[in-house]
Length: 324
Image (cartoon, rainbow, N blue to C red; front, side, top):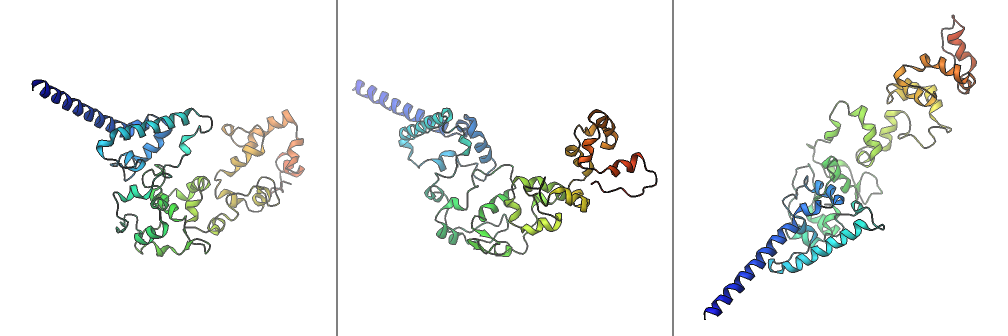
């Protein structure tokens, strides 16, 4: 009897130890720190840390749910995924794991494990949307909620989500779901994004527009840019040397250039005058040494002879001659 009791206690202790080790291994391998061990995954983890799902672990979305007692299967699956990612890391066929779509393998069943498709939409971002209608029509949660778990940390959140809306919605009649702003936004909604609030936005918006014009196009028509700038923006490909290149535009109306290039004189001189050093002041103070070293012939590629005479020989000229 003592041997039987001892064997039973030993068996129970082994089972408890195995379960404890399994539970510990389960928690350990489910931690986001494990994902961060691969440097390719760190941007995704950093994005997840700014999302609304920070209390939801990675396996909740990226694994099929399993009961606790199937942890050996869970550990085997995670080991397989780890081996897959290690192979991808060292493979020349797939050197950039960051390009993989983090939502491409998320089925709706994992979202519906926590969320009701008939739930009412919150008004946090000031939107009017029939959630059930979209859920029935799109048949995919990530068709709208692409950035829910891994948003771009550097992007303005409402505009980021709105970009996903514009996959179907838009002002153009060719859009899948054309309409005006008030279809989705109530009258009380502040349409001016947070990034547009600073007084410096008008001067600073150019770089944002060059980086990604889609957020701009969600509110502004193409003519919005041309009406303000007075010419096609961004500059066309033949802007340096074409029939409608920057030269004639700058000559006919220099103010068009100065609206963006506030220090327009220095901006032009950086390209048009070889050897120009902005630290030494304007080109007019630097050009004598250039003429002495290289000769004056290169000046006449752009300037006519009278352009030099205007300063060097004439005292009665009151108007600057045409540069050509």
